[in-house]
Length: 100
Length: 166
Image (cartoon, rainbow over all chains, first blue to last red; front, top):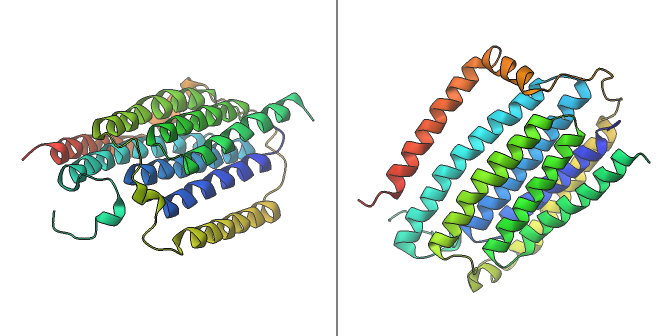
C-alpha cells in the first residue's frame, strides 16, 4: 500500500458501525460483539500507522490490545452467564436493579 | 490502480458488508459468523500492510479462540434467537438518535482523516518477522508483557469465580 488513508477510512467506518451497534442493540451479547468490532477497527489503525512511520511499535500495541480483549471477553461472558442464571435473559433493559 | 489497491478495495467491501451484517442480523449466531468474516478480511488487510504475523494472530486468536468462546456462550445460553424486545426499544427515539450520533462520529473522523493525514508511507520496509516482534516484546516491552500475563491470569480466575455455582 502506498498510502494509508484508505485503510484509516475503513477503520473509521468499522469503528462507527461498532459504535452504532453498541447504541442500538439491546442484547448483551450483541453489544459485546460490537465492542469487539470497535477494538478491531482500532487495531487496524495501529497497524496502518506502524506502516506509515516505518515503526514496529504500532504492531506490538496490537498484541497488547488483543490480550486485553481476550481478558475482557473471558470476564464479560462469565458475567453474562451469571446474569442469565438469575434473569433468564441477556436483555440489558431488564438489568435495571442492583439486587441480584 | 495497482493490483494491491484493487485487492484492498475488494476486501474492505467484504469487511464493511460483514460489519453491517453484524449490525442488522436478528440471530446472534449469524452475527457471530459475520464478525468472523469481518476479522478474516481485516487479517487480509494486515497482510497488505506488511504485518503477516499480526494477520496470523488475528485469525488464530481473534477469529479462532475469542469467537469460539462467543459462539459457545450463545449456544450454551440458547440465546441465538434474539428477544422480540431487542427489536422493540424501550426508548422510541434511541435508534434515530444513535444513527445521527453515528453519522456525526463518522463525519468527524472522516474530516480529521482527510485534513490531518497525509504524507507518503515510510520508504524503508520494517522487519515484521516473528523474530523482530519477539525481540521487541521481550526487551523494550518486557514490563507490559508481564503485566498483561498477570491480567490474563486475573481474568481466568475471575471467569471461574463468576460462573461457579455458589
